[in-house]
Amino acid sequence: MIIKVYGDKRSLGEAAAEQAASAIRNAIRERGRARIVAATAGSQLEFLDSLTAASGIDWRLVEAFHLDEYVGLPMTHPGSFRKMLLEQLIHKTEIVNYHLLDGDGDALAAVRKVGAAISSAPIDVAFIGIGENAHLAFNDPPANFETEEPYLIVNLDEACRRQQVGEAWFADISQVPKQAISMSVRQILKAKELIAVVPDLRKAAAVKASVEGVVSPMTPASILRTHANTTIYLDEASASLLTADARSIAQSIFTHRVCN
Image (cartoon, rainbow, N blue to C red; front, side, top):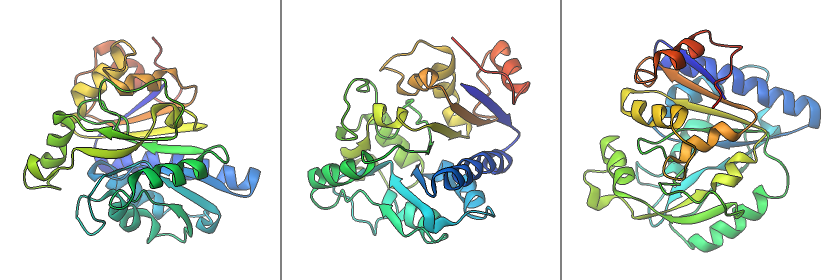
């Protein structure tokens, strides 16, 4: 795992986007197309803004997959991740081949349909975040580290649902759906490259547990340390609880790997 720390969300997002754009260009150059997974949330705004402005990408050769979506939430709702994916990525590029998770319809059918599509070929790069409870996608603790199913219907824990209220997508917790469609942990790990964009002080405890704690389903994002090509982008706030040793390695920045 490589950790990179930047002074603020904007510089973090720009740097992560530079690496992401390079991964996409390389895949297109080597195989004639790129297959990506995209996270959508407030934490990803600066990153996606910079990525969609990157030069030298023929977005018509990019196939995009959705990381997660609520069950029972219409796409018109401000908290819909389909809505965010369309607004933050699809409509700002020329991506024509994309797969949305329709959680407002037949959720099981969406799981099967998109699961079959993503399983048809390797994913070149996945853009992910880490939740305040250290979730990956909507894999809340204790996360299922074993299933090979590409997508799951999961129950959302209270901490996850309260995070959505804190991000102002919902007025109160009663409005937050209790279930979601989520890419599985093992499917996330199948991507050739993982780029995690994790800004903000509210993520600091989850970052510390994921980077310095034991690898455990109770800290879902800790599993990222088992992947051969993971880079986590932090700002000063989200890195603020890391030990001096971890911060020293991270600050020496682009050539050192953090290992446990």
